[in-house]
Image 1 (tube, helix red, strand yellow):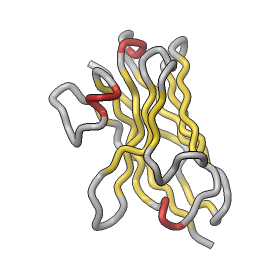
Image 2: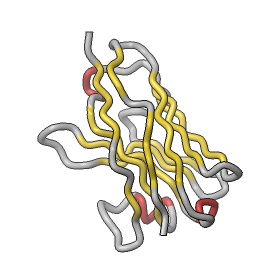
Image 3: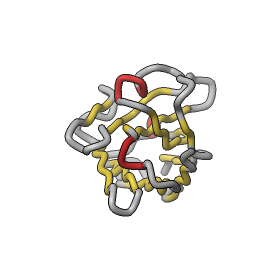
Length: 125
């Protein structure tokens, strides 16, 4: 069982940066691939970025590649999404997720996935 808690959401101006963090409870964090999803109003939830259990492989959606980075620290059960050059199209609720692999995270849902409660990110002037 893994419990995930996001933090760091808020209001940011276009072009600005924002960092999201996810803290996991439990002692199996290092065995999970981790990812960030987002869901904008009226749209389906989409995978934004993912990182393998070792941190040695990362995946990004085309829309955020080059602007977002993802990292994890298995020693303190945390994952971070550093977002840059934000646009209003990045406005969404961002969810932290854990699953068996990055491949599993690319699926809309699985029986092995854990979710955080979500953090609102609003990009507006």
